[in-house]
Length: 369
Image (cartoon, rainbow, N blue to C red; front, side, top):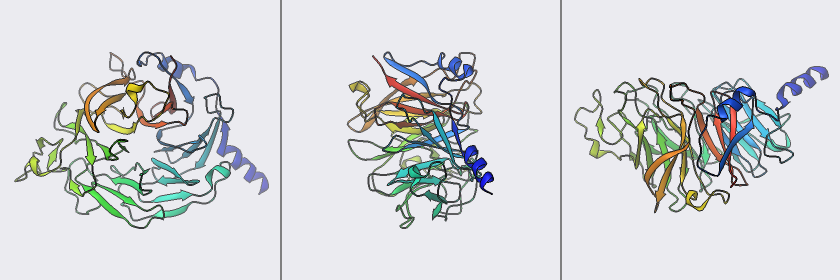
């Protein structure tokens, strides 16, 4: 039995390569960033890397849709994670991770669990505690993104169980929050098809969240959305109206787009905006401070693919006014897809990490000029 335990621990912990794999180095050479920025591989061999969370000690936690949850450690401080821990296996699409007060929260499709004292037990985590288990078990848009807000509450969303439909249960197509102990469930907003990314604008404290538009209305319709929640419960249109200006041909009927809250910014259609982060670090130049970086995962059924980049959405006085590429090149001129960015987190030193679920890597972006 002792020998079996040793084997299991060995399987849960491994050292990552210090040098990126040749095929990943080849992808890096295709990526484009603004002058003065550098991109490198922070961690290799993180299959289906999705949402990330960073502790005060700089441990990076990574969810996936393959059933595993990872921890990455740059123990020698050289800017590369040489240690990888598999904290959990065979979970139900554990896409979302959040860190608070020494505990790691993991969102599965139908529940949120918590690993206590995680950083003292990376090689052998304690059994998880169930925090909340009243979420639907539907896997269509069932993966979750979770974040702790400035109020200390845990925020997430439940996607629509379809491409386009009118769900019977109130919890579908909604944004919600709970207390850290799982109590106080509260729906904050309705009419949200599939939100997989949100953050709080530093100047106003308002919550901005992405929403992925419906499919099969055309290559350029509807726009994907950046929405703003300011504290009151409102309806954002799904399934009656998309992007604030596109009545649904099946469900609009006597509804008018004007009766719903429209987006504060419209992305191109089908770019699939996922993780997002307002930059608050000190490493990047001043013009990036309090600006929004968005991982656009990329279209899956458009005639010609688009997205596959990290976009910079510029803000002024708490509102977005323009969008441009920040990291591009994962989509080649011949429409070959080299990678798919999913989430963005800020490290204590002000650099950024970007997860890529196609290549199974974590990139590091730093300003070096």
